[in-house]
Image (tube, rainbow, N blue to C red; front, top):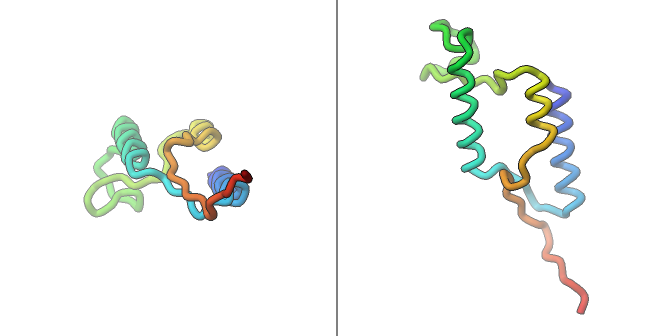
Length: 98
C-alpha cells in the first residue's frame, strides 16, 4: 500500500513540475463523494461494522481507515485518478508569442 501511495504522490509531483503548477488539490466535492462511497463500502463489511474499538474508529464511532478495499482495488483506484477531481493553479501565466 505504501508503495502505491508513494507512486501516486510522485506522479502528482511530476505533474506539478511538468505543467509548472503552483499547486494541485482535491476538489471538495470530489473528496465528499469519495468519503460517502468509502463510508458506504465500510458499512457493508461486517468486520468494520462490529461493535468494537480500535485505532480505525474515531471517538464519534466513524471508521477512519484510509482504504477498506483489496490491494488490487486500491491499485486500480490510484492508477487512473480522475483529472476533474483536482483543482490546479499554474505558477506563471504563459504569454503566447504574437
